[in-house]
Length: 440
Image (cartoon, rainbow, N blue to C red):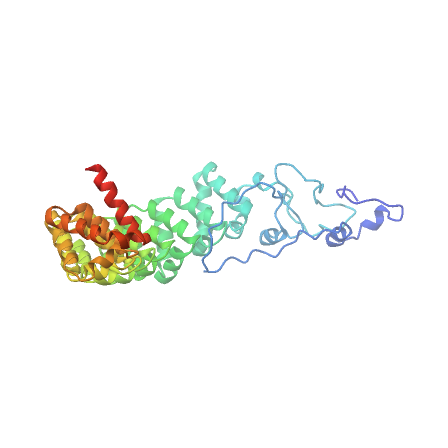
């Protein structure tokens, strides 16, 4: 049979015996599976690792039957770059009934030789194919504006589903980049019609890419207001999600106060739960840096009100250290008052000890002296010398103390030297003292 160069001819087989063979039976003689695959069914809303952009390397240059089915071309394949990869090309044959149902003339041509107009009515489906997504991205760059308009008209109704698709999301990203301001607004209206589904897109590993691309392209006051309003119902979830955090951080950095105020109000009401989250603590630090005036004051006051609890939290302590690092006298004084009477307790904690060290380093000389004085009058002061976490606080206290307080701490080290020599944490204090003496 012409076109099947890889089939072995035998004396028992004649050309006429191939005339009624099916494609599947032909492949069965080769001991390989048919290239027919079920159509792509889309993806759900589950998160997962972000896929890399599809590559042409080691991939066949024909579309599978599932894609051809969506094009209405179930019985043919479309070659690429004029190469048949040894298959010879499955075209119509007068001696065969394999392709008797083909009714179009362009079905055997390479996909790249087709225009967008040839695919009218099938763009949304083909956008989910790895070859189709490349084709449409190139068309939006190379073809006249009316082709982009045609793609937009067919994609806009299904834009949310395409944003979740491994390939379709690239088409949406390109469309958002090249479409007009009015079309961008229509996409935004379609996505934000249901705010809860919009939040789902923002949380999804693929959906968030398209949302971020759209977010960076919107510019008008109405677009920004619409976008931020839709986010407001999911601010807490977004702030504590590895995908959603980028959207919140962009809004904080780039939108005006009047636009992001609704987001900030929700964050202030939930700042403690956000601060105690691995991702949320980073977002909250950005929030502190990019909000101003009365809103910033309310946020900082809410954090300081729970300072003792946050200081003992594995993530919340970073938020407090960030506040101390601002070196704002009023904020620092308010935090120190919250910790007063609890410095020894915090110094023995894994996370609290970090906060106490930051207090000693970032506060004024008089304030740090008050902290050291509280530690010195504690009956458990000697315990800090050999404590896994407290020894770091003691070393920091030695480094910032002056006068009588410094002399008192050095004498304490001298008094407990025999015990410190036999303790792994005590040895660190002794090593610090030796370095200090060499510098003097």
